Image (cartoon, rainbow, N blue to C red; front, top):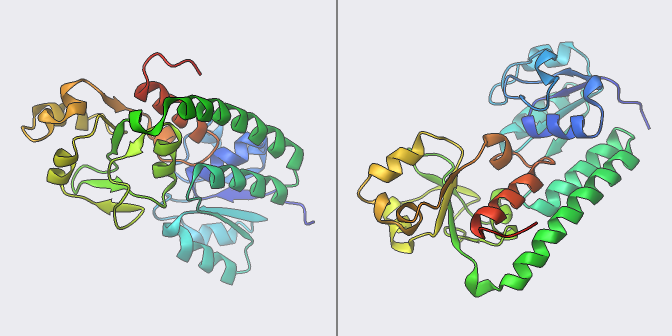
Length: 257
């Protein structure tokens, strides 16, 4: 196996995985959006996740570039054509997120570190699973995830965020939608009347509380609107388990994980 000692990560999720595998010191480049964990701020930037500077990436001659998601499929292909080794992540579930950690651990030749990390994450998920199993499907609250405010974008089945909601013991309000991420109608949300709403942009909460349509929805009326850090809600790295736990605690106040 070829030694991988010079890594460029073009996605926050991948950066977090590399760091969790104790290979932060091998990162020679990240993007402007990579903000976790501590120490990553000192690593050179190669553009943003949305628009990575591929010319500089190729010129840096890394041993491996980490890309992520459908947005990076063209980026991946461009790098492969330039002779750069790439590992591409695009998990559709919490389980696939853990599998992606193991895959990268194998590529970086730190399988033991990866196995220990994933074992710990899996144990935490199993505690959530036991709690949710004991709760029963009929009691699981309807949850609406706001990805973007205008237009109103949510998550459907086939996204790791949908699976995180379900794994935490919720029922994704719009899980029957046409795509993993899609624009939805606010009136449809009102008619389905979710019990819990969450998002990662703090400015949305006062808008919900003032809007006549939204403030009559159960989640807003009962104060069950939650704001989480984007690093928890939008990334499928090791902290996805933190998100599942936090969401489970929000859905079931008083639950002890």
